[in-house]
Amino acid sequence: MSKRIHVAVGIVINPQKKILLAKRHDHLHQGGKWEFPGGKVETNESVTDALIRELKEEVNLDVNSTSAFMDISHDYLDKHVRLDIHLVTDFSGNVSGMEGQQVKWVTVQSLNEYEFPEANKPILEKLFNLDI
Ligand SMILES: Nc1nc2c([nH]c(=O)n2[C@@H]2O[C@H](COP(=O)(O)OP(=O)(O)OP(=O)(O)O)[C@@H](O)[C@H]2O)c(=O)[nH]1
Ligand SMILES: [Mg+2]
Image 1 (cartoon, rainbow, N blue to C red):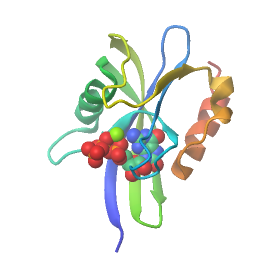
Image 2 (cartoon, rainbow, N blue to C red; image 1 turned 60 degrees about the vertical axis):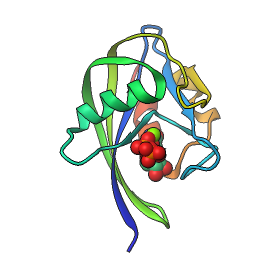
Image 3 (spheres, rainbow, N blue to C red; image 1 turned 90 degrees about the horizontal axis):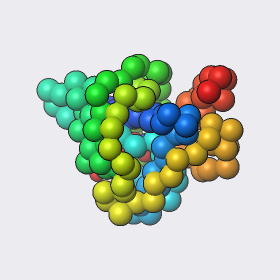
Image 4 (cartoon, rainbow, N blue to C red; image 1 turned 135 degrees about the vertical axis):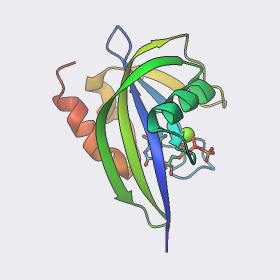
């Protein structure tokens, strides 16, 4: 049986309509690829609380509110992930890669230049179709 994990993922969009990407460290699951910041929802934690906590821990942003965007279940060979993806436009602070990871603001149009985990394909399609 592969592991099942529930992940809170943030599509952070700044006032210039750029989206925040972070690069996963090589040793992590799906390492070396770009991701939308986020992480595992802990026991007794809501997805929103998990996302607020992860965005502070990983990229030092203070998030005020989030809105549900899409939900994806994906089977990797070694684990099953459920990505609970939220849009984040209501935040303050300056981005910093708190875990030494590379971070980058990119336009929606340039997202196809980056390599993402397989599970992210539907997210990219939905973002391309958003008129932002
Ligand atoms: N954060 C994030 N995780 C993703 C994305 N796409 C995707 O497949 N994942 C998968 O979802 C899982 C997220 O776990 P994570 O490593 O971010 O978890 P975490 O921040 O709680 O890390 P930790 O376990 O080191 O505390 C990983 O298996 C990762 O491969 C994405 O866009 N963002
Ligand atoms: Mg993470």
